[in-house]
Length: 174
Image (cartoon, rainbow, N blue to C red; front, side, top):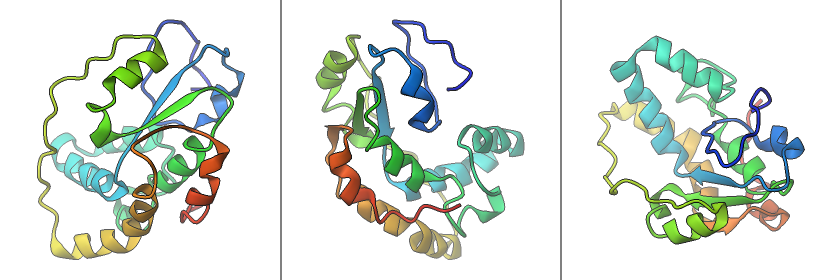
Protein backbone atom coordinates (compact mmCIF):
# COMPACT_ATOMS: atom_id res chain seq x y z
CA UNK A 1 0.00 0.00 0.00
CA UNK A 2 2.99 2.32 0.37
CA UNK A 3 3.09 2.69 -3.41
CA UNK A 4 -0.66 3.14 -3.93
CA UNK A 5 -2.15 6.53 -4.72
CA UNK A 6 -5.41 7.11 -2.90
CA UNK A 7 -8.33 7.69 -5.27
CA UNK A 8 -11.86 7.82 -3.94
CA UNK A 9 -14.21 6.16 -4.42
CA UNK A 10 -12.11 3.16 -5.22
CA UNK A 11 -11.68 -0.34 -3.86
CA UNK A 12 -8.20 -1.73 -3.30
CA UNK A 13 -7.51 -5.35 -2.48
CA UNK A 14 -4.34 -5.98 -0.55
CA UNK A 15 -2.61 -8.47 1.70
CA UNK A 16 -0.52 -5.67 3.17
CA UNK A 17 -0.24 -4.62 6.79
CA UNK A 18 -2.17 -1.53 7.90
CA UNK A 19 0.59 0.90 8.94
CA UNK A 20 0.98 2.49 5.50
CA UNK A 21 -2.64 3.65 5.73
CA UNK A 22 -1.81 5.98 8.64
CA UNK A 23 -1.08 8.77 6.17
CA UNK A 24 -4.17 8.23 4.02
CA UNK A 25 -7.09 10.70 4.14
CA UNK A 26 -9.53 10.46 7.02
CA UNK A 27 -12.35 9.45 4.65
CA UNK A 28 -10.53 6.17 3.95
CA UNK A 29 -12.55 3.10 4.87
CA UNK A 30 -11.06 -0.39 5.13
CA UNK A 31 -12.80 -3.74 5.18
CA UNK A 32 -10.48 -6.36 6.63
CA UNK A 33 -11.67 -9.83 5.73
CA UNK A 34 -10.33 -12.64 7.87
CA UNK A 35 -10.92 -16.32 8.40
CA UNK A 36 -9.29 -19.51 9.62
CA UNK A 37 -5.52 -19.45 9.18
CA UNK A 38 -5.41 -23.19 8.55
CA UNK A 39 -7.89 -22.88 5.67
CA UNK A 40 -5.69 -20.20 4.12
CA UNK A 41 -2.62 -22.39 4.42
CA UNK A 42 -4.48 -25.29 2.83
CA UNK A 43 -5.57 -22.98 -0.03
CA UNK A 44 -1.98 -21.94 -0.64
CA UNK A 45 -0.93 -25.59 -0.63
CA UNK A 46 -3.62 -26.37 -3.23
CA UNK A 47 -2.61 -23.30 -5.25
CA UNK A 48 0.86 -24.71 -5.80
CA UNK A 49 -0.69 -27.51 -7.86
CA UNK A 50 -3.33 -25.31 -9.47
CA UNK A 51 -1.30 -22.19 -10.26
CA UNK A 52 2.33 -23.20 -9.90
CA UNK A 53 5.45 -21.83 -8.23
CA UNK A 54 5.37 -18.42 -9.96
CA UNK A 55 1.93 -17.69 -8.48
CA UNK A 56 3.15 -18.88 -5.06
CA UNK A 57 6.20 -16.61 -5.27
CA UNK A 58 4.02 -13.61 -6.14
CA UNK A 59 1.51 -14.45 -3.42
CA UNK A 60 4.28 -14.79 -0.82
CA UNK A 61 5.67 -11.41 -1.92
CA UNK A 62 2.30 -9.66 -1.52
CA UNK A 63 1.77 -11.29 1.89
CA UNK A 64 5.22 -10.24 3.08
CA UNK A 65 5.84 -13.91 3.82
CA UNK A 66 8.85 -14.48 6.02
CA UNK A 67 9.76 -17.90 4.72
CA UNK A 68 9.29 -20.30 1.86
CA UNK A 69 6.54 -22.54 0.59
CA UNK A 70 8.42 -25.52 2.04
CA UNK A 71 7.92 -24.00 5.50
CA UNK A 72 4.15 -23.52 5.09
CA UNK A 73 3.33 -26.24 7.63
CA UNK A 74 6.36 -25.64 9.84
CA UNK A 75 5.47 -22.11 10.98
CA UNK A 76 3.23 -19.17 10.09
CA UNK A 77 5.31 -17.99 7.12
CA UNK A 78 2.25 -16.18 5.70
CA UNK A 79 2.23 -14.01 8.85
CA UNK A 80 -1.48 -14.56 9.40
CA UNK A 81 -1.20 -14.09 13.16
CA UNK A 82 0.52 -10.73 12.59
CA UNK A 83 -2.18 -9.72 10.07
CA UNK A 84 -4.93 -10.39 12.60
CA UNK A 85 -3.06 -8.75 15.46
CA UNK A 86 -2.32 -5.57 13.54
CA UNK A 87 -5.57 -5.11 11.63
CA UNK A 88 -8.06 -5.73 14.45
CA UNK A 89 -6.37 -3.12 16.67
CA UNK A 90 -5.59 -0.52 13.98
CA UNK A 91 -7.37 2.80 14.53
CA UNK A 92 -5.63 5.34 12.26
CA UNK A 93 -8.42 4.91 9.70
CA UNK A 94 -11.76 3.18 10.26
CA UNK A 95 -11.49 -0.58 9.73
CA UNK A 96 -14.50 -2.89 9.57
CA UNK A 97 -13.33 -6.41 10.35
CA UNK A 98 -15.55 -9.11 8.84
CA UNK A 99 -15.11 -12.84 9.11
CA UNK A 100 -15.08 -14.33 5.61
CA UNK A 101 -18.04 -16.60 6.39
CA UNK A 102 -20.05 -13.59 7.60
CA UNK A 103 -19.68 -11.38 4.51
CA UNK A 104 -23.13 -12.36 3.22
CA UNK A 105 -24.80 -11.73 6.59
CA UNK A 106 -23.27 -8.26 6.88
CA UNK A 107 -23.48 -6.93 3.33
CA UNK A 108 -25.76 -4.06 4.46
CA UNK A 109 -23.28 -3.18 7.23
CA UNK A 110 -20.42 -3.24 4.73
CA UNK A 111 -22.40 -1.01 2.34
CA UNK A 112 -23.18 1.54 5.07
CA UNK A 113 -19.61 1.51 6.35
CA UNK A 114 -17.99 2.01 2.94
CA UNK A 115 -20.67 4.20 1.38
CA UNK A 116 -20.64 1.86 -1.61
CA UNK A 117 -23.26 -0.70 -2.53
CA UNK A 118 -21.85 -4.10 -1.65
CA UNK A 119 -23.40 -7.09 -3.38
CA UNK A 120 -21.15 -10.13 -3.08
CA UNK A 121 -21.53 -12.99 -5.53
CA UNK A 122 -23.65 -15.89 -4.38
CA UNK A 123 -22.02 -17.78 -1.54
CA UNK A 124 -20.15 -20.91 -2.56
CA UNK A 125 -18.59 -23.42 -0.23
CA UNK A 126 -14.83 -23.66 -0.30
CA UNK A 127 -13.59 -26.45 -2.52
CA UNK A 128 -12.36 -29.41 -0.47
CA UNK A 129 -8.58 -29.68 -0.34
CA UNK A 130 -6.72 -32.97 -0.63
CA UNK A 131 -4.15 -32.55 2.14
CA UNK A 132 -2.03 -35.53 3.21
CA UNK A 133 -2.51 -36.63 6.83
CA UNK A 134 1.04 -35.73 7.86
CA UNK A 135 0.60 -32.16 6.60
CA UNK A 136 -2.78 -31.88 8.33
CA UNK A 137 -1.12 -32.85 11.61
CA UNK A 138 1.60 -30.24 11.08
CA UNK A 139 -1.02 -27.64 10.15
CA UNK A 140 -2.92 -28.38 13.36
CA UNK A 141 0.21 -27.65 15.41
CA UNK A 142 1.00 -24.38 13.59
CA UNK A 143 -2.44 -22.94 12.86
CA UNK A 144 -4.80 -24.19 15.59
CA UNK A 145 -3.42 -21.67 18.15
CA UNK A 146 -4.07 -18.86 15.66
CA UNK A 147 -7.55 -20.15 14.80
CA UNK A 148 -8.44 -20.41 18.49
CA UNK A 149 -7.86 -16.65 18.81
CA UNK A 150 -9.74 -15.93 15.58
CA UNK A 151 -12.70 -17.89 16.98
CA UNK A 152 -12.82 -15.47 19.94
CA UNK A 153 -13.34 -12.44 17.70
CA UNK A 154 -16.81 -11.19 16.72
CA UNK A 155 -17.91 -11.96 13.17
CA UNK A 156 -18.17 -8.26 12.30
CA UNK A 157 -16.72 -5.35 14.28
CA UNK A 158 -14.86 -2.05 14.09
CA UNK A 159 -11.15 -2.46 14.79
CA UNK A 160 -10.03 -0.96 18.06
CA UNK A 161 -7.52 -1.31 20.85
CA UNK A 162 -10.20 -3.08 22.89
CA UNK A 163 -9.31 -6.27 20.98
CA UNK A 164 -5.68 -6.04 22.07
CA UNK A 165 -6.17 -8.47 24.95
CA UNK A 166 -7.85 -10.98 22.64
CA UNK A 167 -5.01 -10.98 20.12
CA UNK A 168 -2.02 -10.37 22.41
CA UNK A 169 -1.20 -14.08 22.69
CA UNK A 170 -1.13 -14.70 18.95
CA UNK A 171 2.07 -16.53 18.02
CA UNK A 172 3.61 -13.89 15.74
CA UNK A 173 6.67 -15.27 13.95
CA UNK A 174 9.67 -13.26 12.89
